Length: 316
Image (cartoon, rainbow, N blue to C red; front, side, top):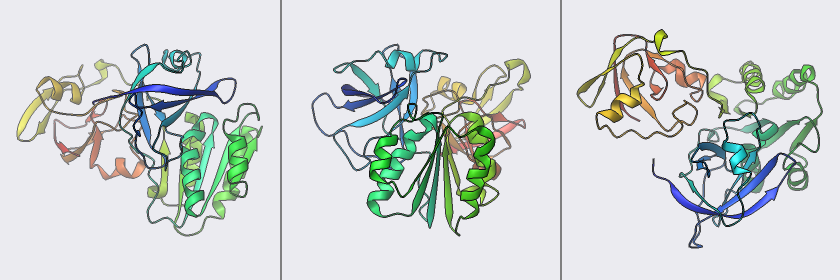
């Protein structure tokens, strides 16, 4: 995937562990717009690429903004980005959206915890300006940890439900009460820590169809070792390739000159999704929705495999 050169035009310390980085084109021309909920890949100073949700005004065009939480136990991406200064150069991808707003939704319930507020911020700001029906439930351990809470209280106080310091054993009751009031056509959007998201998605599917539950997760699922894999064949555009146990589908396709977009190589960004023409997928990603998995029509080829001896793919 091609990357775009940008410079850091501003840095804002939102909380003790969260900074917002404003990214602009070096020549000063507008960087463009994006749809609410979109994310970009950011290649930091250590050449590590990570995915971050855009949290700038979705109708703005001058710069993109991403909020990054400094994770001391991460593999270096967030720590390195927190050392970036105004004027430093970075590379980013074009925006991609895995959290698209349901076009047929009558109401939107946004649920965020911690740094998961970032995609919900752009969605809430857009919906508020456009007069779209929504409510935002924001869970945070403390006021100090709640990035953008003052902004949200100022811009959309009647739509915001700030659950600060709520114990985990009380979160279910709060969310169940909110979702039980969901009108027909309600869509639910979730972003936050893995365990929180798993819980909210399962709860939401009790009140709305699975296809109306949207989530964004930038944490990779642990993959089995190659010894657990079996080899299979994959066909693309009339050519057949052997995928051994120790290689992924995308590695084999790229080695044979096939043009497949990739980014994270961990099954979390959705860049490498391809269409399944024939075959039974073994999904190992953390990006496809429940409905997409059950359809058997798409696959993230950077991590997922075939259950059978053969799979036929096409570009998505």
